[in-house]
Image (cartoon, rainbow, N blue to C red; front, side, top):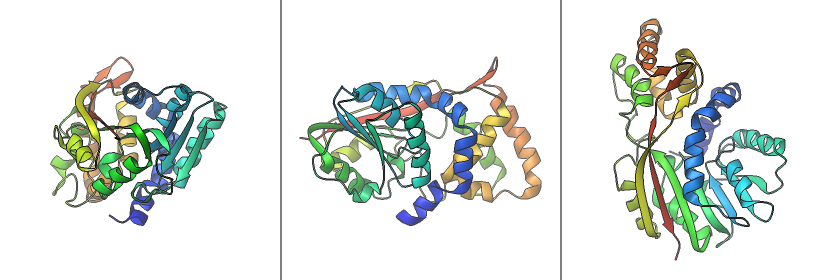
Length: 279
């Protein structure tokens, strides 16, 4: 997928509207995932950090709180519009060690050996040329610097199977169009660590974890949210005949309802964590 097309998809107006509408509940749902990646990355005071595919600002903002005033975090994304939201969030917290940069990870406009740490949450799966992008991240790391990634585990897990999985049963064709960006590209154990080794990283580690993934609201809300922000599933959503939506919505709501506890929807998320070090 070409970078300009990718940019238009990830920065599309429907996604920006959803990011603003659901920002508090989305942040709450992703909090455990964000905290896990930050903990895994082990940021230290004074570190210079690059967060890739930052979107509206996490985990970049959380990292900025860890590296302190002597450190700095650059939040990088293809979408300038999403980065504007990240900037505003950082300003609200009065961070002076945070900046944004619109750029393509395949062609980083950054000097060699600039960063102590690179992070990427739910972004590595969407790199059009994984080897090139990872090699670029390796290039901008200082010797001994570490790159840390968090990716989705398999499609067959509660959040996805109760939303897009139900949709697939009603619509002909695959959940993800062949050749399109695939959120589950690195779901197979060992695949992400193999990609890191192939890009020149050393001391590569990988593990799979199940983390809290809780929507603090109704089943109707979380289904609306899932449709609004899940860019790779747009072709699937667009294949739904208009007269099928009432039945699909009812089925999705019923399936999600099994995860409702008190006033929240508690799915759990299976994710892959992987890291590599530059020699």
